[in-house]
Image 1 (tube, helix red, strand yellow):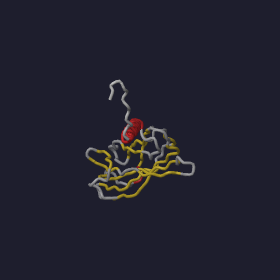
Image 2: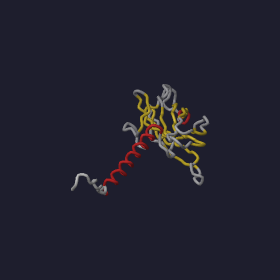
Image 3: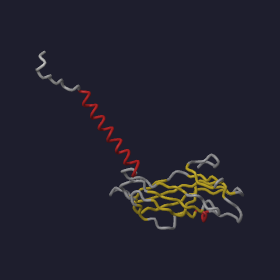
Image 4: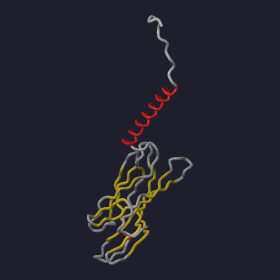
Length: 181
């Protein structure tokens, strides 16, 4: 072969093109995952609920935060019912499946917006003076307008939250210290 003659290009192997395409797809997935991690899901989501520290007077007199996790879709005409799944007092009085609609108007939650509300579950239980709730589980049921024109209303139920009395706080999950749902 003469050194002055140009080298001929060999065609690129078929798998090299696939490797470039796979790298491009992987890069796109990483970018989308970063966007979702920073701003939230790009699709409609159910509201997320976060109870705050219970009142010292009654753990059933609680405030909670509700958040629209979607980065693009609002929650319209949101209605929230606080549910007392189960509870037991010091005097061994039991309560179960009692709901209270929150009295404050909720209305709409914009994408990524959070609001704090008060749940008056204490009005749903009849305790004698001095008797206190020692075990309880709550959850939240929400209804809101569907994002689709033919969808009507959507309904969702939050995780169960279990009362931990020392220190007083609501923990996500079906705690072992309380009766099962």
